[in-house]
Length: 79
View 1 (spheres, rainbow, N blue to C red):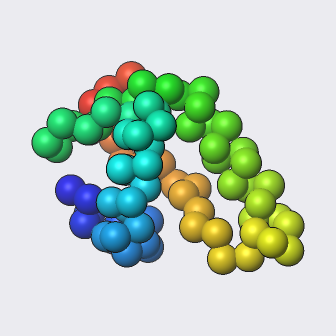
View 2: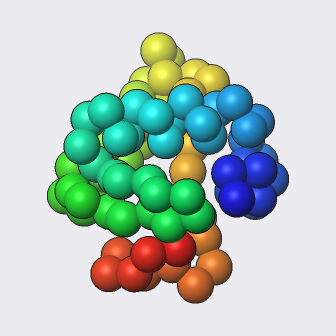
View 3: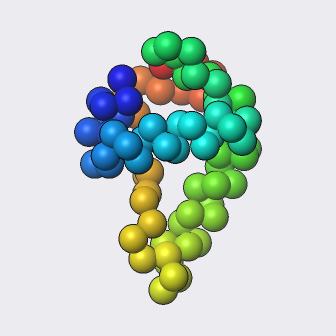
């Protein structure tokens, strides 16, 4: 659930929900009930690289980070 993902990553439920909504709007993922399908792996990787770059800069302080994979997740599977 989104609450489990938020707890695992140390984020708020609202942050995870906003991120999922934004990722769906941008075409990175599709969410259907409890299943998440990654539609644009390269796009998500690019976001992670951009976020990491921002975290290293003075303006990037406080940017949410998602560094750890969820248990059992692979890019070719639904979770």
